[in-house]
Image (cartoon, rainbow, N blue to C red):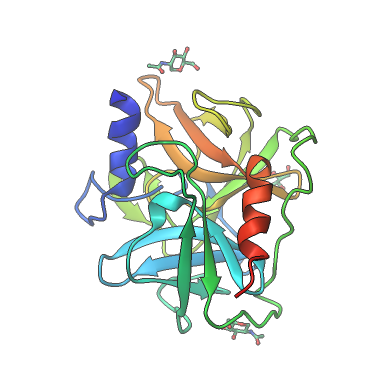
Length: 238
Ligand SMILES: *[C@@H]1O[C@H](CO)[C@@H](O)[C@H](O)[C@H]1NC(C)=O
Ligand SMILES: *[C@@H]1O[C@H](CO)[C@@H](O)[C@H](O)[C@H]1NC(C)=O
Ligand SMILES: *[C@@H]1O[C@H](CO)[C@@H](O)[C@H](O)[C@H]1NC(C)=O
């Protein structure tokens, strides 16, 4: 319980003080070409000043992490620089029923947009994996507006991304997660963003365990395991 709890707690604190920020930036990454990741969604709660990432999987649904749930979330589409946000869209939140606050596991949430997105050059959908039987390619990429250093409050106003190699494509310490372990990677403010492997989103940034060798074991919710749950929510009658 200890280290997971500590880290998940870190991810759950919605504070702007150095060292105890929420969620997961990209450390050792580089700026994305503006609007080259048009499925990427900025999620922000103005009251709690809490930020997460997410991604558009249908005109009316964004996929993100369950620990990103707060009461006044809005999603912002087609964002590159968070200093220039478009109007936010209100959502209904569907966190996974088995997700327990401050505990890793089942860290997945769908946000249903009250006003569906109008797709255009900077706002696009990314297709989910089709089955959970395919082998996940190990060349992956994570992205977000989170911190640029693990222990300093250094959020990025522009989207950043980093290439990562998958360490485990099955169960990383807890069931239904995949993971990476590198000096680079997601950190505070990047939670909920996608881990894209081959061109398919296979993971959702969930939490990490710091390592004295400065390599961070980062866990991602394994999306393909949750496909039945995702389709159940997205196809539910209104
Ligand atoms: C695309 O949609 C976004 C979000 O609604 C909007 O901010 C942007 O101006 C649109 N771009 C174009 C080219 O219409
Ligand atoms: C990721 O890898 C691709 C393909 O090798 C490369 O073009 C790109 O610059 C890399 N991106 C980063 C952030 O290192
Ligand atoms: C840190 O990472 C190294 C290399 O992957 C691993 O051998 C070691 O067990 C890790 N230490 C902790 C505390 O997780």
